[in-house]
Image (cartoon, rainbow, N blue to C red; front, side, top):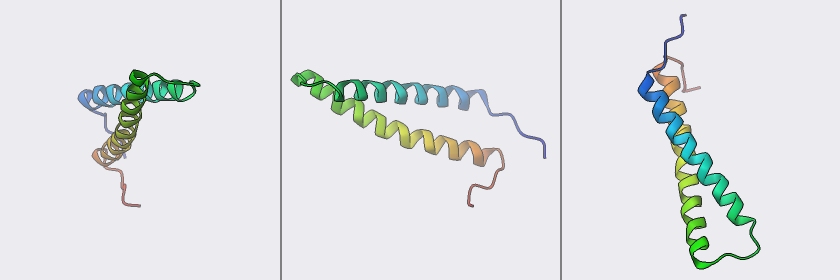
Length: 76
């Protein structure tokens, strides 16, 4: 079977979500390793962790949609 090309819009969305997810994960990791945090840094850490969680779920969902759109059997 000939593989189908992934749409450009899907690739752009995937790259944007992946970039935001990795950036927020790196921020959360950096802030979590600080000995003390100011109130603003604590709020930023909470936001970065929330963005990391949502982004990770979104990336997994996009990978599933991408596999399904190419005709691969994702049901197992």
